[in-house]
Amino acid sequence: MIAERGNLTVVVTSPDEKVWEGQASSVSSENSEGPFDILPQHANFVTMVTDKPIVVRTTTEGENTFSYKNAVISVSGDKVSIYYNI
Image 1 (spheres, rainbow, N blue to C red):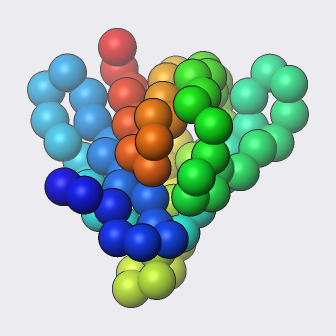
Image 2: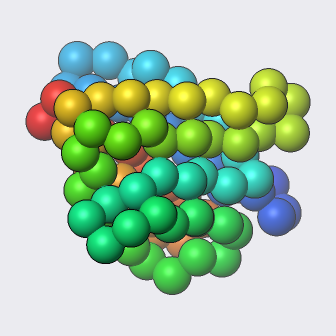
């Protein structure tokens, strides 16, 4: 899937299933350094999120909030991959 102009393509997945995939305007959470936001054209980025909500903001669904004990968020181009239970 190719991101629409000005959006992120976000995929939330575990080793067993894809939980959510779609277009988003931003992704927010908190890592060991503090809160962060991912917006379109964000620099490549990888981080671990532990026991903090991950908020995916869409223009059609509003906010989707995902909470996992441990998750890895990876940003490459305008694609955000959120892996949990790894």
